[in-house]
Amino acid sequence: MTNVRITVKDNRITTDTPYHAGYIKAAKALGGRWNAADRVWQFDAGVEDRVRAAMIEAYGTDGQQTTATVTIHVKLDEVHDESDKSNEFVIGGRTLVRRRHRDCPVTVGDKCSIVEGSFPEYGGSMRYPSLNWEDGTIMEAREVPESIALRLIEEQPDAITIIGETKTDRDALMAERERLLARIAEIDALLA
Image (cartoon, rainbow, N blue to C red; front, side, top):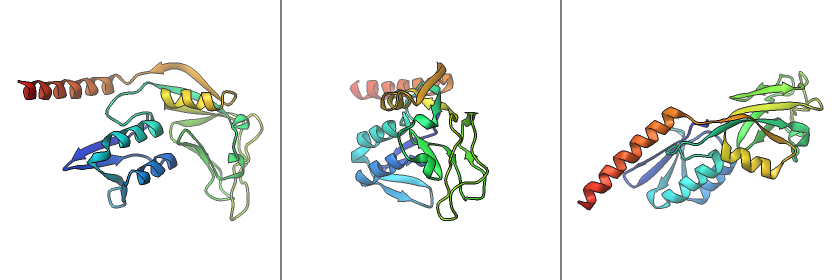
């Protein structure tokens, strides 16, 4: 599962998230400021609901609630974009594979693997490295939030397939349960 965290303290919201172009765009639109020293986004507390919604849209969770995850297979030939001509293949905010330089092999992303096919040892030009995968190449991405996988399938049904069963993180569910029980106790105290 993608590791994201949101903290609310002193009328400030801080989000600790991996890179996702869609989330960065949303964060800027919500008045977020990038704190390069701590590598987090910071917001005014007044936009908490919208920050959480942006995190769920990008990552499938805001880090406070658990989410079911799945493993997906991605048929690279079927994805409708120009990724084979670029140096990175990103889907659902996750980098599946990238080539940093023309003369270096591809690097497979975190919790990803090549199921079928391959990539050439080098590709593109010095200025514009590219992936240029072999026809029929299929990538696997594990621990993809189910909501994101379903959205991807809706957008590109020929390219994405869910493999195996949905998994739920029991430890995360227990931690969420404890947070909710603590919040209920706070509410009960305020109502008393």
